[in-house]
Image 1 (cartoon, rainbow, N blue to C red):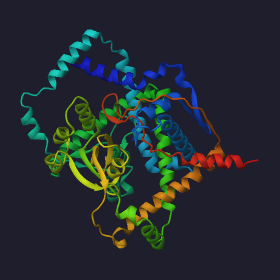
Image 2: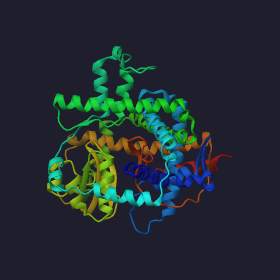
Image 3: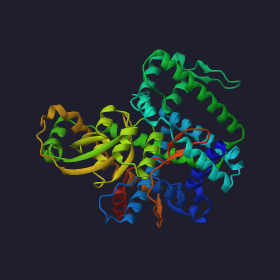
Image 4: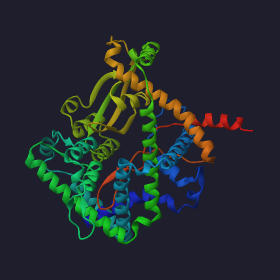
Length: 467
C-alpha cells in the first residue's frame, strides 16, 4: 500500500504538469521563429511554471505574457543561430544535454512500465494518505532536528569536476570506469555526468567521502541500466522525450551564444571609470532591502519548505528548520538590510518583488534560496567610493548593459533573417515548481528565462524600413 501511495503521488504530479496534453487547443501554434514552432502547450507550461516578480498590483498580466512570448522567441532565434555555428557540438553543451536526455528517457520509461500500469482506487488513495501522514510524525522530532539540522554540506560543483578532469589528464579520459556487458562507461563520461548530478558530503573525511561516492556510483549504475533498457525499447524516440530535450537544448544553446557575445565585449578602464562617475548615485546610494532567507542544499528541501509555508508555518520557523547555515538559523533567516547591488541574484530579485512577498527558488553558489522581502528603503550609509576597489564589478555591470543593447539589435536581425510569426491569447496560472523524475531525481520543471522583449521593437522598426 505504501508503494501504491508513492506511485499515486507521482501520477498526481504528472497529471498536474501534463494534463493539458489532451486539449486539442494545446497543439495550436502561438509563435514561429524560423523553423521552430512554439505551441500553446509549451508556452502555457513554461509561463505557468516560471516565476514572474510583480512590481505593482496594477501590472497588466497580459503584457507580461506578451513579453514572455517575445522572450521565448528570442531564445529560439539565438538557439538556431548557435546551432548554425556548431555550438551544439561543444563539450559542455553535449554533456548537459546527454545528462538531461537520460533523465527524460528514464522518466518516460517509468511512465510506460510503472505509472501507466498501476490502477489506484479512491479507497487506496485515502488509505495511503493516512499511512503517509503517520510517517511524517516523528516521536522524537526534537531529537531528530537537533541531530540533522546543523550539518554543513560540501557540494561538488561543475568547476570542481573540471579541476578533477584537468588533474587526471586527457590520456585517462577514455579508460573504462564502469564495466557493462556492452559499451562500458569511460572516466570522461562518468565525470561529465557527475558534474551535473548532486554529489555532496557532510564532512571532508576520506572514509565518509568514500562511502558517499560508492553509494553515488551504485545509484549511477542502477540509473544507467534503466536508461539502457529504455533505449532498447525506443523510449528516446517518444515525442514527449524529444520535446523535453528540445526545450532545454534551445535554452542551453542560447545561453552558450549569449555568453560568447558577453565575453567578446571589451570595456576599458577609462570606459568603466566614465560609467562609474556618471552613475555614482546608483552605485553608491542604491536602495536597500531587508530580506529573510531560507538557504537549502537541494531543490527537494526548498519544495518541502514551500509546502510548510503554504500550510501555515511562519517563514522564520521554516528558516530555523531548513537553512543549512547556523548563523541564518540563529537569526530566523534574517539577513538585515543590504544594498540591492550586493548578494548577487538575491539583491536583484528582492528589488523586483513587493514587501511581504516570497520568491524562489534562487540558485546561489551555496545552494538554493527562498527569500521574503520585509522592507525597502533608500540607502543612507557611507560606502567606500574607491573606483579601484570595485573596478571589476563596474566592468561586469557595464558589460551586462552592453550585452543587452547588442542583443536587441542581434535578435532583431535574426528575426529578419529567419522570419517570425506571432499569435497570442494565453491564460495565466502563476506557479513555480520542480519536476519529479521517474525512478528518482528532480529538476526545474522548465528552464527559467528572465524577460527580454526589447528586441521586438527594434525588429518592428526595421521591418517598417524594408520596402
